[in-house]
Length: 169
Image (cartoon, rainbow, N blue to C red):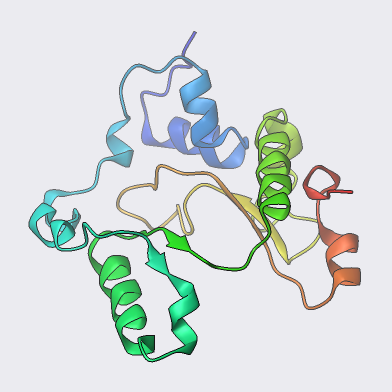
């Protein structure tokens, strides 16, 4: 049964403070996207601009060759107009990508109170942050995503800070 999230504050508390995230909204059985997640029309992606990016995946192997500027332009155009893009020939081993996907599924499947430990401002390690929007207190519309951000400068530091659920063996 979906929680009662009539007010913007109760939605904010459920999603952000309690660690439920967008996944928690979906898992709760919500049948409509809450108003707080709907972008004002003037801030939405222009569909005509995004059609200009209907292109095949971007080949990163060409970054070190004669087509360097073309690849850079493709990435910039896609990021500015659509907000995302697919890359190929990036050199990341499939096994590593699968491990990352498994770690993400494990982490985001945790109970909300276990994920909330890593929320910005309360995380035991300032280099690990779990959240939904980057600055939910100030955004006009919340972002329809959950993320865990982990930055580090060495493998040793990563092993000390990362949640156990995000480590792979």
